[in-house]
Each structure stands twice: as C-alpha cells, then as structure tokens.
Amino acid sequence: MIDAYEEPGAPDTRGGGRYLWWLVRRQPGRAAAGSLLGCLSLVTPALVPYLLSRAIDDGLAPGDRAVLVGWAAAVLVAGALTAWLNIMRHRIMTRLRMDAHFRTVKVVVGQTVRLGASLPRQVAAGEVVTIGVGDVQTIAMSLTVVGPGVGAVVTYAVVAGLLLPVSPLLAAVVLLGVPVTGVLVGPLMGRLQDAETVYRERQGVLTARIGDLAGGLRVLGGLGGKERVGEAFRRDSRRLLAEGYRVGEVTSWIQSLGFGLPTLFLAVVTWPAARLVAQGDITVGELVSVYGFVAVLVVPVAYFLEFAHQISRGLVSARRVVGFLRLEPLEADGTHDAPAEPAVLHDPVSGVRVPPGRLTALACARPADAGAVVDRLGRYLPSEATWGGRRLDEIALPQVRRRILVADHEADLFAGTLREVVCGRSGPDGQDDAAIAAAVRTAAADDIVRGLPDGLDSRIDAQGRNLSGGQRQRVRLVRALLADPEVLLAVEPTSALDAHTEAAVAERLRAARAGRTTLVTSTSPLVLDRADLVHHLVDGKVAAVGTHRELLAREPGYRALVTRDAPPEPDTETGPEATPRPAPDGGPGPDAADGADVRAGAEEAVR
Image (cartoon, rainbow, N blue to C red; front, side, top):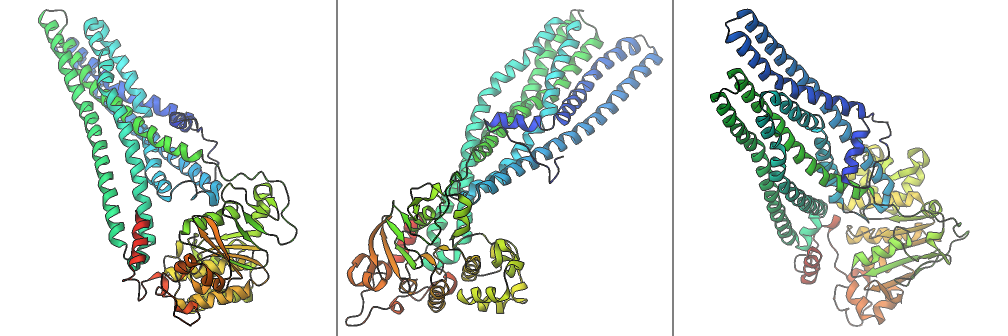
C-alpha cells in the first residue's frame, strides 16, 4: 500500500478510463496477483462438477467404494482450496483498493495545494467535498473487481472448454450467454452513467449549500433569510432525492439481471442437457456435471455484471477527479521586478486607482463586485491590472505575494494555539510579543485574548469553530496586520463587528497603517469616514471618487448605499454614528427585523 510520504506519481488526466488504468499500472504486481487469484478462486469451483461426475460414473455407478472415496476427497480438497483462494483474493483486492484510495486522495490534496488561493475561484467547495468524500471511495471500489472480473471471463471460457467434450451444443449455448447478457445489460450501463453524473453534480451543489448555510446561519437569522435559504435547501434536496431514485432504479435493474439471468440461463442449459440424457447421448454423471457447471457460472456471471456496474460508476467519478486535476493555478510566468518604491495599483476594468501610502476604501452595493476588484489587484484573477505602470502578470509572482496581501474575511483558520494562528507563516518565533500585542490592540481583539483560558496559548479549533463570527474576523485581521505587507487589500474586515468595536478598529487601523498602502471594502460609514479616499462602485465600475463626506454631500446613490436609505437630519452633519448597525458578531441589530430593504437583499442573494 502507498506510503504516507511516497510520491503518488503523475496521474493520467486524459480521461476517466485512462485514470483508472493509471491506478492499476501503479501497482502491477498486486493487480496481476489479484487477477490470478480471481481466476483460480472461480475456476477451482468449476472443477467440482467434473469431480462429481467422475465420482458418479466411476465410483457410484459401478459400486467401487475406494474410487468413490478418492473422488469425494478430491471434492473436499477443491472446496478447501477454493476457500483459501477466496481469502487471499480478498486480501489482495483490499490492498489494491486502499492503495487506489490513498493515491487518489494524495493527488487530489496535492492539486488542492497546487491551486492554492485560486482554488475557490475555480471550483465550489461543495465540489471538492463531494470528490473527497464520494468519488474517491467509488474509484477505489471500482478497482476491487479487477480480480473477480478477470476471473469471471476466464472461468466462463474454462467451463465452455469442459463442456465441449460432453456436448458441442451445450458448449455453444454457454458461450452465447455472455453476448446475450451484454445486449440486455449494456443500455442500462449507459443510463447508469448519465444518472450518476447528474446525481454527483447535484450532490456537489447541495453540499456547497450546506456549507454556506452552516457558515452564515446567524447572519441569515439576523437578515430574516433563514426561511428562504431553508426552502432553497429543501428544493435542492428534493431534486437530489429524485436523481437518487433514478440511480437506484437503474442499479436495481442491473442487480436484478445479475441474479435473474444466471438462473434463467441455468434453466435454458438444463433442459437440452436432460433431453440428451433421455436420448442416451450423455451419461447421468455428465448431466450432473453439466448442471454443476452451469450452477457454478451463476457466480462468474454475477461478478461480470458487478464488474460492469462498478466500472461504470468508477468512470463517472474518475471523470470528475480528472476534471479537477486539469485545473491550472494562476500562471506565474512574470519575470520583471516589482516597483522599487511604493506605487499606484490600478484596475482598468473598474477604474479603481489605489494611491501608495494612503487608506483607500471601496463602497459597492454588491460585495462580489468589490471582491473582484481586490482579486484583480491581488493578482488572483487574470486581468490587465497594473502596479507602478507595469502589468501585475508581468511581475514575478513571488514578489507580488511577498508585498501584496489579500486579507479575505472568510480566509481559513488552521487549528493551533492562538499565537500560532495569528503569526501565520512567520511562526511564533518570527514575531515578538510587542508586535503581537500591537496587532491585537489594532484589531480590538484584546477581549478575545483575555477571555481565553490560556490567552495567546489557548487552543483554537480548525476554522475557529470555538470562536464567534466577530472574533474570527478580528483574529484574521490580527494575522494580516502581523504579516505587515507593503500593500494590504482587506475584504470587509469589520462586517461582523458591532458599531463600537468597528469604530475602534477603523481608527486604529488607520493609525497602524499610516504611510502604507491599504485598501478596504466596506459600506460602513464608520470605516468609510476614516478613509483618505473612497471609490463608489456601481455595477463594478467607479461612479464617483472622493472623501466619505464629499460623496455624502454630492452623490445620492452613495448616500443611499451607506445610510440604508435613511435621509440625513436637516441642518446636522451626517455622521457615521447615525447609521444603524447590526449587533455584535453579525447578529441582528435593533433594525434588522424590520428592515424590508435588508430582507429584500437577503432574498435576492438566496435567489
């Protein structure tokens, strides 16, 4: 079985069938041994009817007890040998399956690491989960039929050869059984592949929806969107259930034919054999052997149909894995150096210009539009974005990653102590306590450290599951601040915080990043009021640029966006404190339950 530290090899991604064949070729000795044992374990029982016929004709009919005992002992030995061969075949096939399982896991995990941050931009999380949970197992199970499948074909040929001296007619009937079975079952295999493909796709969609629902349940509750999301989940579940019934219907027909056809075949062969005995063309012992041969064929035929069934399912899963393995990370073919001095970041698609050394904000009604701008400026999407007048994709990618950091508000948090989590790549030894304390204070995360039993040395679960939504967001911000990049692009860094904490973070972030290039996406007046420059995006394009107060005064669309359509009080300065805010950690604020516009936005997002 593959070693945990062994390289899995370069998979063949030219198709699902080629990928399965690659898995077989990676362990040729085991596949050959499994095929040999599969042949022997199925051929050996086929010899039993011959031994019985000899016991009847040579021992029982003449009354020769010694000969009868000898042939009976041979039958006993054949049975014991068959049991041992089946045990060994099962052990070999289990190792073959486990090797294919872990090898596929390793290539999928390796591809996930290779894609890096471009992974969520190319494939949904539900698709990756479905591949890791379902498709890997299906592929592994499909290889376990290598031994029995080869053995079934060989056994069929051996039985036909044993029947040929008895009766050419019966041998011909047996040989015709495989083509007839293929004609009956073949169309069902095509239907099964189609149904399995659709089922897997819908399973991926539903898995992604489960993840979204689990991650945003509290926010959905605050926005009044739980019912809408619940209805969408029920609708997708019903569709998946319907596809599951389709798969089950085809599978049940295949399995029914797997058991029914051999039985029918037994009756078809037994009838002419009995007539041959009545006519005196074959002996009673030969009749018993014919019946035994055909009865033995029930197992190989069932294996043959199981082989086709498992391979059909394995091909569907292998195609999905191959499709994932064909994804390519962002090209890293840039050769030029990054600007020697802080320079302007420019996105021609949206018109956003981020001046160096200043705090810039993007305000947009659709967070996805602002996120796309950040992805282009961070070089996570192919674009014509420039840095200091040179296209980002022409600059060496390691230099871009070292100097430009995209801090996503849903970035992964790995398990470890809080100190390890916030120190990130540099590790606990790469950051002194003073730097950590400064970053913690800037992110207003002091209460998190104080509230944990061991402070910075307290254990944090994977994805920060033992923290609230607002706490996770502040921990991510601490990590970004400790990285201390030349350019920080932060996506919604305060969206899950209460108004008081958000105001403190905005003010401290401005001070901590003074003189360094920082871009934040937000629609909160508390953040926007602290920015040196605000870009108002409409449909992904810059509609207006200015300070927060300038845009409030002259841009009705911007004012409606950041004040939630609340008109400013006459003769008073429109300050950030006038805007209703959600409760801490993304929960409902005092206006959340009655905000029809907020609920409408949530419903639109669900749709």
